[in-house]
Amino acid sequence: MEAQPNARPSGTWRPWSIWLPGTLALAWSGLLIIADGLVGVMGGWDTPPPGLYRWVRAGMIGHWVLVAASALVLAAGLRFPPLRRAAAITAWIIIPVGFGWFVLTGRLASR
Image (cartoon, rainbow, N blue to C red; front, side, top):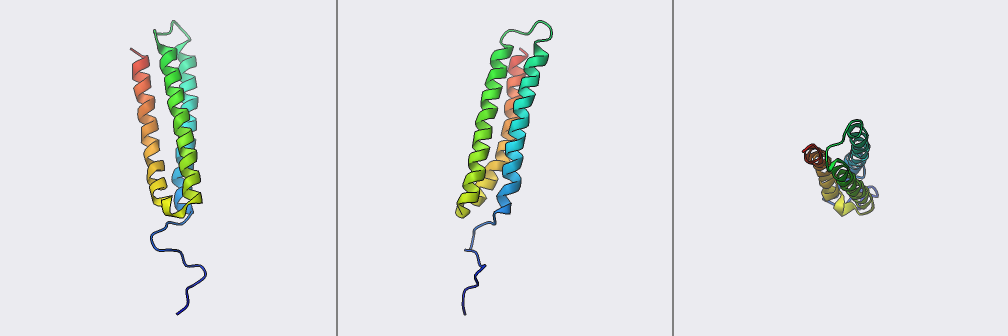
């Protein structure tokens, strides 16, 4: 019995399995950077609370880190087939982490 030319090694996921979570995590993190910018603009319309811009900056830095992590996870998942499962799980985890970071910095900025 010959091996089929299109056969894949057991346990590896196909490339499309990382595209959805990877691109969603990347887009979500990018949208949260825009949201942080809007928070900074809207918070400065009147008298901004003390420390607002410091927390907005911290939020933006955190979301830039998540953008970099999303891009790295997507690239690693596409480049190394044995890592696709871990990359997909990591990409799905980045989405709620980004939301949590946005809520946390928003709460801290409003105090």
